[in-house]
Image 1 (tube, one colour):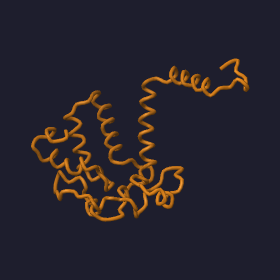
Image 2 (cartoon, one colour; image 1 turned 90 degrees about the horizontal axis):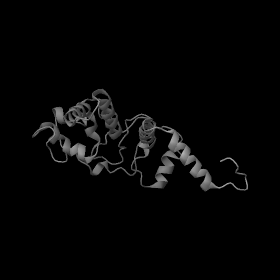
Image 3 (tube, one colour; image 1 turned 180 degrees about the horizontal axis):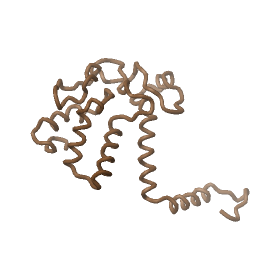
Image 4 (cartoon, rainbow, N blue to C red; image 1 turned 30 degrees about the vertical axis):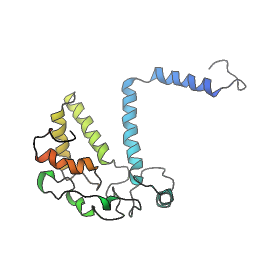
Length: 185
């Protein structure tokens, strides 16, 4: 950058300079930490506005989001009313007391999450990261056991929303035929 005057200033030169500085000064571990931090922060910021398709409703309900906010009800674009979850009891029931909201219109998928709280998928990512840290490597059986334990605990799903693959595939994972040998695994 030395020798550049205001007259010779070029965004291309500046971009290349900073690209090289960033490339040389950030370790792979720092990049991974930054990516994970971005995952957790981005998910928590986006959580209240998940599945808003009507931008006027989004603007009316949230305006400009400058920080973490709690989701609001009603959710004008919710399609939860079209969703179903098999009625289960015992260990395969991952919705717990949230089942009552499935099949109803205008329910926010994350209505019980607090401002800054992560969604289920990112909570599962955190569980996987914790497992990797504890065990030092990935073992599918260990992950399945941990995931099942997390999803079946009352703290596991404070939100109503869980993807179809988890809500409809989970019973097969838990009740048979054999953990780890179900469709979609």
